[in-house]
Image (cartoon, rainbow, N blue to C red; front, side, top):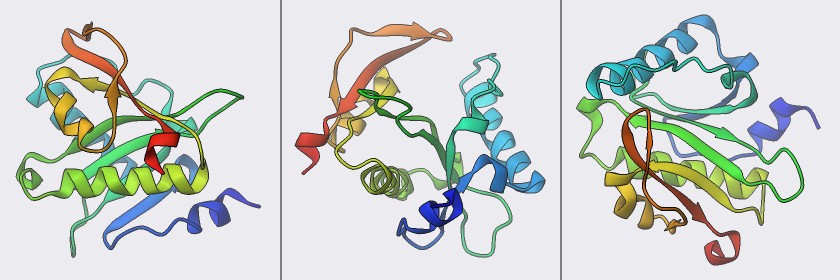
Length: 166
């Protein structure tokens, strides 16, 4: 099956779209990168190389508000690449003006739907900012590491075990 057909097999809520890197046009990729920098670099005052060379291997889950030309929520998702590997979710964000609306939870539930559809029975991993540990816990994630610094921001590794998600 062609990747486009595989991605179209995932049922997502209104406003959400799932893209392979090759399907992102220049305007949308620019808007995604601008939002990532707005949140991770400017708002969180974290100077790091956001364009890390991994986007081409990721699936990109985007929420576009009705009538908007720019996303207000985004994450990237990596499917397992070998035996024993996990789905990995990263770069999870919502625009500041969209926070407190439940959009972040809807984004993450959509990501878990993608994971369950495209990689059934596989654990999902996230390197979470430590202050969001309880938030991810609401989605079935458990902490599997001690806190550590990533780009000078406290993080913890978390996993949602596939057997617990059933």
